[in-house]
Image (cartoon, rainbow, N blue to C red):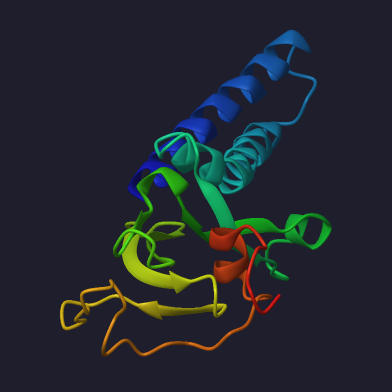
Length: 177
């Protein structure tokens, strides 16, 4: 958020400079009010640009095979440009290259869910996904496993094959789907 503010301030100075140049080129025919108008427009343009580009910027720092599971979009009356095209405020993703099975042939996959929100640090939340039964559960330090790799005390969410997490991790291939 700090760098967004710095960017907006520098854009304001650049816009004011453009206003000064425009006044100079027109031999002072444009009113002095053009300078703050240009500064404000430049600050607005910089802010809008940052809102729409932050997802691509954070995405570039993550693994190449990152899969976006779901996005959360922002629309607000005080941001009228979002009424035309909402911007992505946050998303949930995972990288298939980071997946692992709890035990060979167990059918239960450990996934690192990445929860990313604008202006917030990334949260990595491990989860268990059972493709055969179309369900998933949070993986926490108290989770215990049997010899076959099945969790003993997991709190499963029986979401079904249409759940975005189950669908993305299992690739649409579930026994119940």
